[in-house]
Length: 315
Image (cartoon, rainbow, N blue to C red; front, side, top):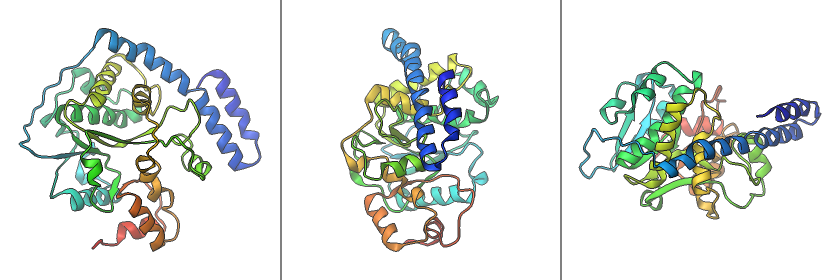
C-alpha cells in the first residue's frame, strides 16, 4: 500500500461504527495495493514471460501407471499436524482414498517427486521471505506438481463431507472463482474476510487456490509455475500475500457467471463455524458442496457447527 493509502487507512480508524470502519478500511487497503501489485507483475514477469518464453523445464521423478493423484502438503510432516489438520486429511482419505492415490508431502519427501531449482531450495530452507516463506512455497509447489503430473491439489485445510463431484473431477482444469454477480449478503462476506472477498471492479483476488484440478502440462498451471519460479529467482520480498491469486486473475479473468463454482461455496462451513450446530444448516451446506475450506481455529466452541461436524462420524 502506498503512502496515500496508508494515510487514508490510518484516518479510517476514527470512523465510530465498527462495521462501516471495517468495510472502508478493506476498500482502502486493496484500492491502494491491488493495482500496484498487478501492474508490477505484468511489467516484470508476465510481459517478459511471453516476450522471451522463459520456461523452466522440470522433470518428473516418479511414474504413476494410470493412477489418479491427490497432492497435499504439510511442511513439518504428518506427525506434526494439529488435530484439525489431521481431521481434514482423514476426511480426504475416507472419501477419496479408494479412487485416488493420496500423497501428503513434507519437507523431506518433496524431492521424491520433483527437483526444484537450487535458488528455490536455498530460499526455502533459510526462510528467505520470513514467516510466510513456507506458505509462499506451497503456492509454487502446487502448480509445479500439477504441471508435471496433473491431478488434484488440496490444501491440508480442506475438509471433505463426501466424495468430490464427478463434474469437477472430470474437468481438464478447475478452480473455484468469484461470481460476477454480487450475492444479496455480499457485505457479510466482505466482513467475514475483507482481504479475500470483494465484488468491486479492480479487485484482483478472485479465486480459491486451495483446491485445484489440472491435467498434466495444463497451460493454466504451467504458465503460473514458470512465472513464480522467475519471481523466486529475482525477488527479495513477497510483495503481496495473494500473488498466486492475482496472477491467475490477470491471466485468466477469474470471475465467473457459474454460481455453482463460486468460491463462496467452499467457505460456507468456515463462515458459519461458530454458530450452534443446526442439522438443517449443515445439510444445506453439504448439498452445495462436499469441499470445505477451513482455517486454524484458535478456539472451537463446544456444540458449535464446526465442533459437531469435526466430531461426529459420517455414515
